[in-house]
Amino acid sequence: MAATSDTSADIEEHEDVWVFVEQHDGEVANVTWELLSKGRDLADERGENLVALVMGENIDETDIPEQCIARGADKVLIADDPVFEPYRSDPYGEQFRHLVETHKPAIALIGGTHTGRDFAGRVAVPTHAGLTADCTELEMEDGRYEMRRPAFGGDALATIICPEHRPQMSTVRPGVFPAAEPDADRDGEIEEVEVVVDEADTMTEVLEREVGDVADITDADVVVAGGMGAEGDFEPLWELADLLDGEVAATRDAVEEGWIEPARQVGQTGKTVRPKLYIAAGISGAIQHLEGMDDSETVIAINTDPNAPIFDNADYGIVGDLHEVIPELIEYFQEN
Ligand code: FAD
Image 1 (cartoon, rainbow, N blue to C red):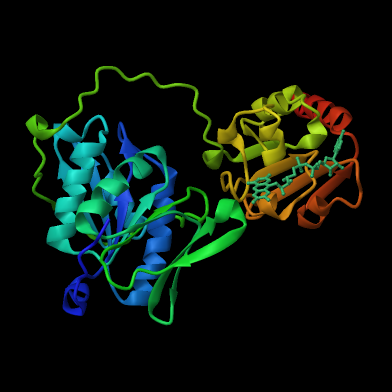
Image 2 (image 1 turned 45 degrees about the horizontal axis):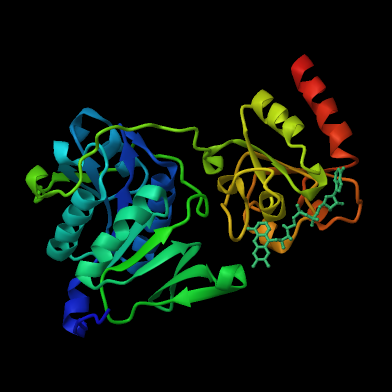
């Protein structure tokens, strides 16, 4: 699609780093806190404000705006209307587009979740902003904003810049940035904005919502991950994960074998996790896998091969057969 070129004067009008606050039924997605932390750093480096944008109904009955300020926002914009509940891409996209055109942010960060991926394009296309999807790194480099994301199926890491258009938009993979602890003493401004979307103009209507058992391994404090060494039997891993109130994850090879669903794949072409505890069972430790878990707080590796590279990235290593070691761990945790 041909985009109109902004002039440098237009570009200079754009300032501030925006973060889209993803909330469903008043519950904020963790990626929002991660983006506010990263956004805070970017805003500080640029000498600009960090602005959080919340859309929904009766937001003032929640503590979401205050939480956003505690997590780093200088200002919270609220678009409050029944049209935003439940989530639909057209009202969200249209309201965000309007705010981009009237408020002119320089950078807009959106979680690379189902929701974020769904509506971000509805903002990027009409504003000619362009959109870098699924970013894993965001940096200011000599005053220039650089977005990085895996390319060519994960074989390369592409650096993308946006010299001619604003805002510089990214969807960002959940789990890649740590979320800073909230600081309840931070000050910030809360502003309700005009809602420009009308129910009559929306093209979609939600008739029914069925929430399935969708795994979110990125939110889990404990991840028990299995690889080819599990030889198709993930049952002990599920049992251990249940005991530890955790989630089960896997390597790409295990996913490709069909032993577990793709939503649970960790790594360069899967998800990024940073749990308190990552148990890697029957996983060799390929670089593409490590990329998705090497920020875990504590890693325990279980592998029959004492020379498996995963041990170089583990805090504790157990050389042994996972089919013997995991049942022993289960027994231990059941008793203690
Ligand atoms: P293997 O490498 O086969 O390792 C199995 C391990 O199990 C071995 O170390 C073995 O000693 C051990 N073992 C065997 N039996 C037992 C037992 N009974 N008990 C304990 N240990 C045992 N991989 C990902 O995981 N995520 C990605 O996102 C990803 N993206 C990729 C992108 C690209 C472009 C490419 C080229 C590859 C990607 N891969 C990814 C694949 C990656 O390179 C590895 O092939 C994969 O991670 C290996 O999976 P694995 O550790 O399960 O299997």
